[in-house]
Length: 290
Image (cartoon, rainbow, N blue to C red; front, side, top):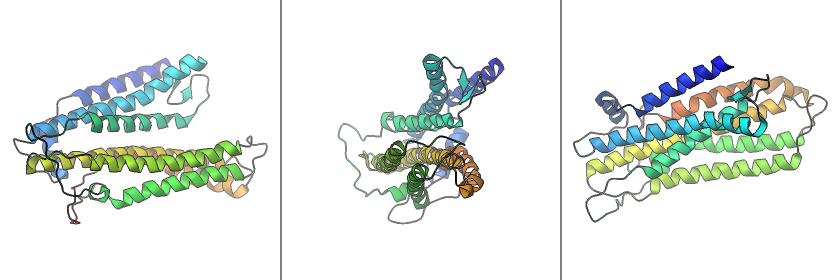
């Protein structure tokens, strides 16, 4: 276990060092091209600060999702664990969800803390209507909604199906409350995404407005990627729980969706969170392939 902790520490240090490294011109140009943004002397520093600052906050959030559960488990139960796997042989893979939760928190803090461009002493808000579908593919939004509903229905199923000697019967009231909380989580995440898009957008010039649009698109993709990862991980855990029921069909079939959902959860932050996307205005398509 000591060797595992050493390797994990080295990996964390490398990841943090990369996050804190200066943003190269090559990376800046690549990011701008992916978001359909023309870099100018006016907006270049804004974008560079965003890439570095947001990357640092998201990375620290993910690292906190690894470290904090280790410290809590050690202080609360005296157990040494890493990503849910304990030195005593017990394991809880669901603990990996804290990484996605930390990443999500970092993405939200990045959006709240990073300065917006202003055009001098007087602030003038851009009046162009901003809709979530202009900044995030509709299929991602619908996937988020569908996974919220699927996870809620899964918790209801866990509450209703019989369990026997293989596993104790879950607390039905707790499962139903959990289903309601999942629905609230899904609604809350979508509300946060809309708030990111519709926050006041100080207007200074066309180039700064374009840069702010690209930054908002990156922010909402990061939030959506972490949200999908959390919902997929929850869905995987629910499917895994159904394999312990007394229903033969569930015991035989739920392993597959549990594995698929877990694999998709691992991909979601990177695949959705860093997807190339050009903000759409007036309904004109602007998405670029991932």
